[in-house]
Image (cartoon, rainbow, N blue to C red; front, side, top):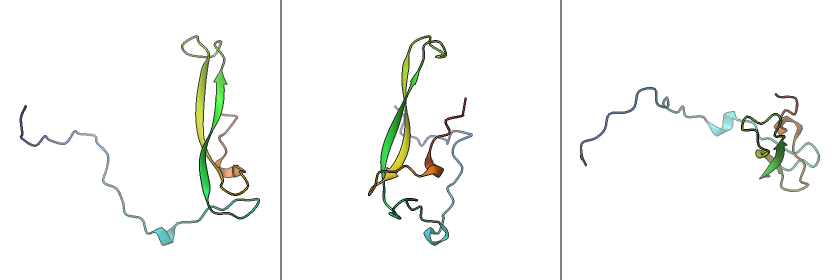
Length: 83
């Protein structure tokens, strides 16, 4: 195995921009005003009829719910009309 440094792969990730946290917006719960959220998942079942493999599948969709009341903010809800 060579110890020479490897050349970067073309088409890799562009350099990350630094963002000032003061330029961002805090998301708060629409119901209780809490600003902390917990990672959770919706589980969607895909019918074998529409599944690309022809088999039933369970698909996790990551969302964030309020750490106080448990509500998932409307603007963080997955689009149920997407196809």
